[in-house]
Length: 64
Image: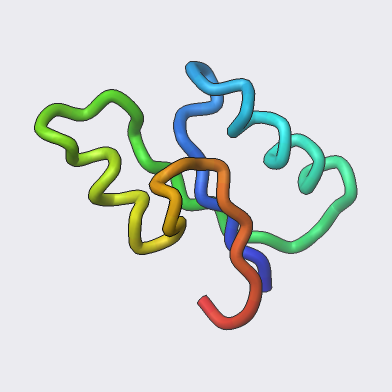
């Protein structure tokens, strides 16, 4: 199973692109949405467990 970690598709076209590609191909994936622009570095703190760079989108494979 794939896990796609993204920010808001409304604010981030970079997050929208892989989401759209996976939807169009019919791939099975789970979406994990992390709200962008949270106060006190909360956004980065929520992203880091999924992406060492601290950026989204991130596509993870394997068990969820």
